[in-house]
Length: 461
Image (cartoon, rainbow, N blue to C red; front, side, top):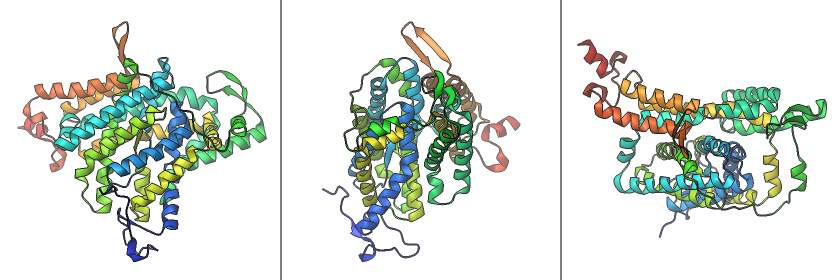
């Protein structure tokens, strides 16, 4: 049985590829070079994979360790045909914030995420059996884009009320530095701009503490006090080697309902990842879409079952592949190994957990906005016509409900709000209106002739 763990040496010797040459997924360079590429993939996923568990209130050490396990599961399931790193999904950050605001703890958060992983796994099996058309039928681009957008923008109050007030000037400087890095840096460094922003903010907070002393502001709990911007006391007491703290998930129906809409974002992320990897490797991977989605679901279930965060495929690592033209899955096995080692170092996790709130404020201003605007990118890439009321009305209503955290109370014990309610409105609204809409509203793509769509032409007749 081929599990994709055998590679042939590229070019016969596995040394430097010829100019313009591509190292295929089933090839590898020499092991020292492969290990170096694996380390580079770990650095590329640093920003999001370390920030996400901190924002979700979960153990960053466990998150990193389980990202390595998830990557191994994914590589085995796809038999080495889809080079990918699975790291902590940022799509769940808003979900975690909502669940905790409703009184849930880490077990409740991971239980809700496990349920999403199970649904994602089942969707993957369905896609494997019936093809990708079932995704397009249930979740056309207008729906997918709107849900991804409201998930991202629903996070705005978290930055505004939790992180930014802890140190507004550090937050502003980190935001400017990170934004400059994303735009001005080139190649690989632009891909790790979030990570570089974290390093900059970490160092800046340490320097401000040395120069100005403590700051009088809100801390992570919201209480206003005099405290150090960068508190490294936990780092000093942490062990160098040890297992992360594991915990079992717990399941609450209300929390699961809040989390379920994220499955739409995960399906979109996986589909986009498989398509992108297929294009840059020049190999058709359409037959692996269902497997990739199911593998992501299974890996997320495994991670959340022990208290870790759910996972998703990482676009940052696609950037590394595109820059190096090395698509070898051996490099991802190396990256997974490094992640496992990092996860077994509690002192490393303590350093991550000590990231100051002001630094997170500057990072999340950009990061949360970027998540939301991915929804707009889905609309743009698919040519969604927002002049068409069939697209405009459900998307507009769902976005305001999701971003504004509008609530609907059905009984004393059952309420839908924010992300969950916005998603329900977008999906049910679109399909219900489609049943009632006139035929000229149901064109799947707008016409490109002078920017007019079919229903515009109908009205002009």
